Image 1: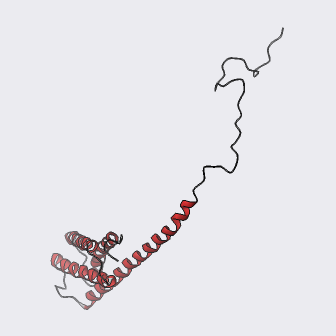
Image 2 (image 1 turned 60 degrees about the vertical axis):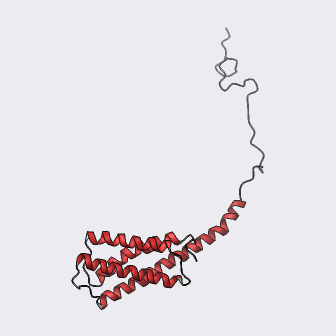
Image 3 (image 1 turned 45 degrees about the horizontal axis):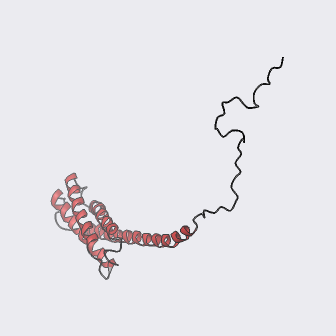
Length: 175
C-alpha cells in the first residue's frame, strides 16, 4: 500500500476527524473538564493538520503500526493542547485514568479506520467484478419482438382533418 492507493485522502480525513473527536472525548472521560470553544477550535486545526500529513505521507511497510503511531501522536498533541489552553485541574501530568482513556481511544480509532478501509476495498473489488457483467447486458438495438403496427386513416395525412369530408357526425337531413 502506498500513499497513491486511493485510500490516502480517506485515511487522512478519518485520522483527522477521529483524532479530534476521540481526543476531546477521552480527555473528558479521563478526568479532564469538557474543552472550551477556543480549545475545540485549536484541536480541530491541529487534528486537521495531522490528517493532512497522514494523507500526504507514504504508508510504511507496517501500515497498522504507522496508524497507531499517528493516532497516538495526535492524542498526545491534543492532550497537551487541551491542558495548555484550558488549564485543566489535573495539571500537565497524565493520570492513570487519562492515560487509559487516551490509549483506548487510539486502539478504537485504529480499528475503526482499518475496518472502514477493509470494507471499502471489498466494496470496490465487488464493483470491479460486477460492472463488466452489467456492461455486457446492454440491450441490443435489434428487437426480438416485431414493431407495433401503426394504424392510419388512408384518406387524410393531416393530424386534424377540417375539410368536412368525413363520415362521422349526425346523419344528413333528407327532406
